Length: 161
Image (tube, rainbow, N blue to C red; front, side, top):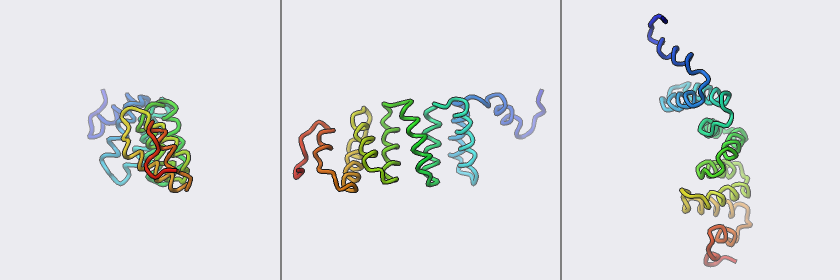
């Protein structure tokens, strides 16, 4: 029997479930939600542990990508989101988030591709995606509006060439 102390239950839990990706991910999200000074670092360690246990565990990939983006590491965020999209290609949230990171990194055409793919999926927020695509089109100075309308299965918007 393990002696009881204030931390004995948490320690025992940690020892019994060290390699369970779902539990490590959950603990990481709870740690992050606590908002402590070292919450992001502790949560990242849990997400890393979850991915050591299951390298294709999509929730941990997405969470780790969010932390990477928050600390300004767009390449790490894109890497994790790309792995997540490969594992769950029909998840509109993953595609949207990857598009958002690509847009923030100035990869306009790649962002447009992700937003276009997301538009075709159920559960996608069409208005938000159209706005983001339009921002990318303006940034590349190549958007006529026609490819956007085609992606939606509509005619060209009024005023488009």
